[in-house]
Length: 180
Image 1 (cartoon, rainbow, N blue to C red):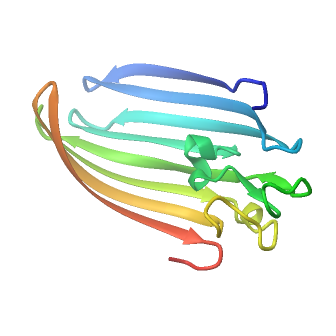
Image 2 (image 1 turned 90 degrees about the vertical axis):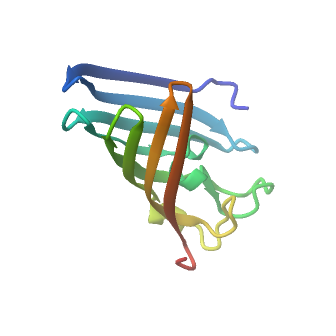
């Protein structure tokens, strides 16, 4: 509703090593957001990503980001802004939430049909932003402070158009007023 599109760009470099791609990339994003009552927030993000073959069957992949008001992209635990009061009150202040995070994954391709993956991720809104307004509001009631995730999965591909996978995921989310 800001009457301006969002802008994004990505540049990457790729080279083959061990028969696998080595890729290093960087990206940027910008959006002007209208939160009503002439409360505008500039959302932006800077990102880096990588895919690094460590051996013929092992690779290391991941992404890192830093941005503001990027809840719609999955950053800030889905939180884009923090409100000083009710979002429908014109006097309410709106603060774009700064966030930093990323993930990394180690992949082992045992055979053409079997693959094993382990990963860790972190999504961390800035505590100073989350605590900027005493009693401030978020989409989730109590603003969220951090997500940490760890996972392990295996993938079996009996054919090129069919795959089976099982995954174990551990997700830990911390809130501002109680750590669960």
